[in-house]
Amino acid sequence: MAEIADKWGLDEISVPKRQKLFRALFAEFLGIFILNLFGCLSATCGDPAVISITFGLEVFMIISVLGHVSGSHINPAVTVGFVVSGQMPVVRAILYILVQCLGAVAGTAGLKVFLHESHHGLLCHLYLDPSITVLHGVLIEFFLTFLLMLAVLAVSDENKSESKITGALTVGLVVVLGNLSAIKYTGASMNPARYFGSAFIAQSWENHWVYWVGPLMGAIAASLVYMPLFKAPKLKIG
Image 1 (cartoon, rainbow, N blue to C red):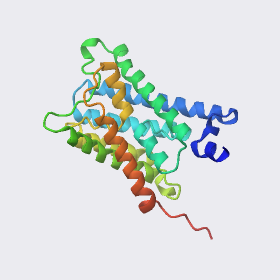
Image 2: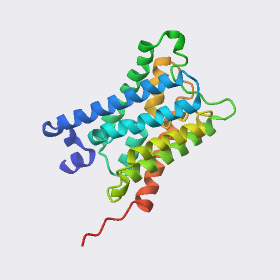
Image 3: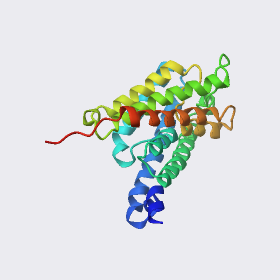
């Protein structure tokens, strides 16, 4: 039983660790709340460059401010990627994903509070461009998230101390890159919860599965590639 508890992370909800877990969960909720709120506000302007830079700056800021509390996954795909790479227990991952989705819904809902309904637009909801198929959409989201997860694993690699300083900036720039390259085709979600928040508030579920399958598979693939092939070797002391 002890081995099962350790593997699944059941000790995460034990009394000694509960406060630390709650802090991490709140950090994930707040992080993606900010991501969706200000990202959706920028989307009302309709300029792809502005939207791309806004999301990248948000990610940079969130990781810089909250990264030490929860790791600032703010993305179910990243959380699943860490589970696959053996760096996160299952119980914590499930709780992370739940609060990420709730935070995203709350963030998008904030758009209705701060702006007149004439500015709500599509509530930052994403659609596949008519020029691509559903399979294209899955592949685009797959490769965008594959790149994002590679960056996240690289900057969080405990054996790469030099990457810690610029880690938040690196991940933020990858988000900008993903948005600039593919926002026209899928909206460049790279984040199932970010999509879920807007879909829930807009009550529009067209091709919803694309924005889960593509990113989740991309993050899993990146973890399976990075850990055996690219993980930095342990530093030799002495």
